[in-house]
Length: 307
Ligand SMILES: NC(=O)c1ccc[n+]([C@@H]2O[C@H](COP(=O)([O-])OP(=O)(O)OC[C@H]3O[C@@H](n4cnc5c(N)ncnc54)[C@H](O)[C@@H]3O)[C@@H](O)[C@H]2O)c1
Image (cartoon, rainbow, N blue to C red; front, side, top):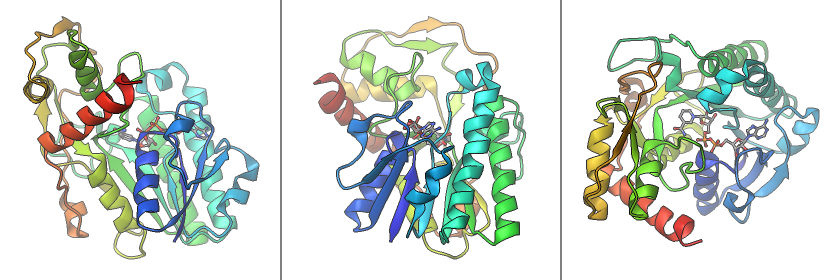
């Protein structure tokens, strides 16, 4: 198949591009490199350095069978500070991607939502029906969904929404001021420094490995039961931040006590995906936490710290 990935220089997009190229598909990549790294785009990707809001986006869609739309403004704190740009990229930009897909006769669009849609819900494990967005980031993802439904209704363009929980694996972002916990812990501990735990470490998160996420992406490439639906993509199991710290310390064979700093009170205390719907279409997570952490450790040791 010929596949277009927006956000192909980012964490999930570059892993997906790698997987699809290995499987013999041809991959077109779009990214404006506002956050992703050119060095992360796998060799073999037909790359367009382009903004998803660019009216010329349809030129990149020519002959494409499936679009994976992953590009987004996605740091919740940044989105909170700039709701106008958040809407511009995540809503207007997404509508432009859907329009380009429609104009060029793309067969299907798979796009990224987020477990942030459940941030106001207290139901655990959380099913897809529990939407309760609060932050501008989550609201922009919900608005993107409404536009996707509009394109489905108006033009019969098949769409699948994937609501990722905390995705981890090689290339997970390690450059943000406050990086995701796993990257932050591994980076610091490998350098013999004490990582920061915000709050008590009792917060629990549903972590899902990027290889499992890519299994779902592959499933969605083919027309069928995923068309027209939104799916939770989590592991259905959660761990406290303190558990994660212990697992990583054991893996690295180190015993460095963490520093503690005040928590972010606006963040959910617990996330846990109800993955019944995802399992009903034949998907199941298969990477164990320990195996998944090993893939991250190897990447950070060999590709980040070594350079
Ligand atoms: N990583 C997670 O745990 C997670 C969880 C839930 C949802 N998501 C969603 O999954 C998608 C991919 O996330 P990721 O972790 O790979 O993020 P990432 O930041 O690593 O990648 C996003 C990419 O989009 C690009 N981009 C941003 N704005 C753009 C624009 N206007 N035009 C073109 N390119 C643009 C960036 O340069 C970057 O390479 C996002 O939509 C995100 O909201 C991710």
